[in-house]
Image (cartoon, rainbow, N blue to C red):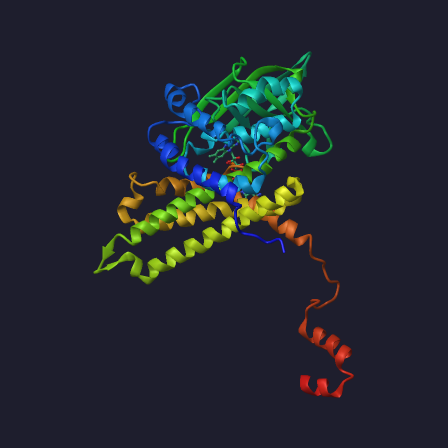
Length: 430
Ligand SMILES: Cc1cc2nc3c(=O)[nH]c(=O)nc-3n(C[C@H](O)[C@H](O)[C@H](O)COP(=O)(O)OP(=O)(O)OC[C@H]3O[C@@H](n4cnc5c(N)ncnc54)[C@H](O)[C@@H]3O)c2cc1C
């Protein structure tokens, strides 16, 4: 029997340290620093760099990576257990060297990059000396990447890129962009029409039209225009026409890492809701004694535990198969369930706190808004539900009979044909 829900004691010690460090050292940063991606700002250098050093000394830096890239090669289950703590703090991922979108960009550079690309872009990215940006979505089409129209045309020894990108997160801080552009509009298979490029941020012709924000967050999702932006031929990432393959590799890991961190936020909202209901009274009794309040606590606890188990099992499957394609159904299920979890628990926490819950003195409104971000970034929920359904239905076989294979009269007839020779059994069945 290999089922086990316990963490081994050695790793638990690391997790205890991560918990204490996140609560006491990282969470306060969320209140005094603005962006975890502004790595050149004096506040970041003064407050974040020493914490990153402590994480390195502890051997916990960039744990999503294998040892060849400076990580621990812990695998996804251990990573999940860490991320469900670190994710509670806005600065958590960057202090541990595992922040999106850099983690995903590092993954594709490691996977598809040439030696020269790795040296110039991957090494400083892994050290968080620089940050990066991923530019796929366009103003006219996000959920359907086949609608992208940004073009890259080969001119001599360069690729020249023209087009617009939308919601390119952290473009304002990025040292380089990874841009998906159409290189082969006439390719027979639509998924072979686009390629991926590494574009240095200082390239002439890149214009941030404006930085867009949501809720009370810093506007950091850029509307970017590329006008005759030239990059050398060796700045293509992966093969020509492989843009979709590169993008897919990036997204598999990214989605599950977001889910692990979402557990942390939902748990924080849950803990706060629990503290509130055992502390506040109305009509001569605690909120916690009212059944409709108890229902909210119970529903939240069940949903959180269900989601956590789904995430951990998916992480375990990724470790087992070492191939995201074999875990597509599970990752899509996690991605589809994640926004609802944060939305529902944060909304209940908000509601149970009353007016202060809705106010900007509490984090709930931000988390509710963030749940919509989780439902959009890396693809809308609907698309992931379709993936789950398609993958699930592959395991079923259609019947060509007029009635279903499990039609009760048919099952009974089959059973009678099998056992009905025995008069005693037949009599009992009648
Ligand atoms: C906070 C945040 C950060 C982001 N960061 C990046 C980034 O760094 N780089 C980047 O390239 N992009 C980024 N995105 C963009 C993100 O990938 C897109 O928002 C997403 O793909 C949806 O595209 P859209 O916004 O154009 O919505 P649309 O494509 O217009 O979709 C709108 C709605 O239509 C419905 N819909 C769409 N498709 C289907 C379907 N197949 N079936 C049923 N219903 C459907 C859904 O309800 C969906 O929410 C980010 C988005 C957010 C919110």
